[in-house]
Amino acid sequence: MGKQHFYETAKPQETAVLVSVPNYRQTDAQTNEYLDELAFLTETAGAATLKRFVQKLDKPDIRTFVGTGKLEEIRAYVKEHDVDMVIFDDDLSASQVRNIERELQVKIVDRSLLILDIFALRAKTAQAHAQVEMAQYQYLLPRLTNLWTHLSKQKGGIGMKGPGETEIETDRRIVRDKIALLRDRLKKFEKQNFEQRKARSGIVRVALVGYTNVGKSTLMNLLSKSEVFAENKLFATVDATVRKVVLESVPFLLSDTVGFIRKLPTKLIESFKSTLDEIREADLLVHVVDVSHPSFEDHIAVVNETLKDINSAEKPVLLVFNKVDLYLQQREQEMAEDGAEVRPSIEDLKATYMAKMHAPALFISATNKINIDELRDELQRRVAELHYQRYPNNV
Image (cartoon, rainbow, N blue to C red):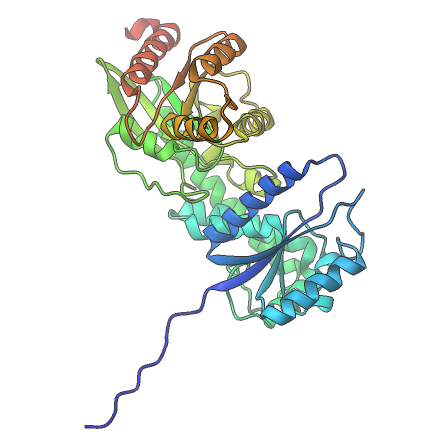
């Protein structure tokens, strides 16, 4: 019997370097935190981060985003380590992509393209696929002058999950036709969703909102006793999921929605209109916050700003701080290391946010089921109150 030969069929993991160009007002701590988030996005998309490059500028270079010296430094590293791509923590213009690519001779990915790529990976339903595809085409349209030749040289991977990436002959007219077609398809989905929501009238609707990866899906599973995909990755949930929940004989509909993030591409928000309608038409928002994240207050601000953008900022909100167990562990560790209190106690946080919100602020752990009964009681009270206000004849 002849000697057997085995061949490696698994594709090697792509490698990336990250680039940030903060202005002088941004602190080093903020820059590191934003790059941590970009690294997490990169990991979620399936690539490994090898190095980070930072250059503080009053404003990015109009031609190459970074200065000549920094570009040369990146080029040397990319060449020496055979890096697959360079990922920028901002959006780049078509000419910037072209100029940087000419200098570095590797794939160039900006923040919006990276997020769109993750949404393409995460989309499960036909509607979510159509929403992501439309956002991708809208992203590509102003960049068509150079993008198709750029794509023709690539072998797939991050940023290459876009529609029709091998069709070099694709032009603006074809892309516009595709966008129009997708828009019509999404209108049909919206009509179906509207009919479904109309059929749900007479019952209070509650939507879980929050920054990405705060534990909304885990909380959804806990409250609705259902199996919604939950993972420690950004944008684990792209499609809105709706479940009927009954607490103490009070029924309501609970929806888990796509997580928000800093610099979420505008086109993506527009494309996900019907998913965001679950938030717009909700009677109560449960704003879930990862209290263990060092920048949770910034995350609250990003969510509030996005709610304002979709005309949902005035809705009643129940603020729920999740991962309280992690927060307490981190606080204990810091006190042991520094010998002094660095973070406020849960009691102090509760008092602060109750004063801000003029309403209860709950501190829970969805994973370890800490204070879940308190959350259920408050939800039941708020839903019963809303049901009486909205549907007095149906009590």
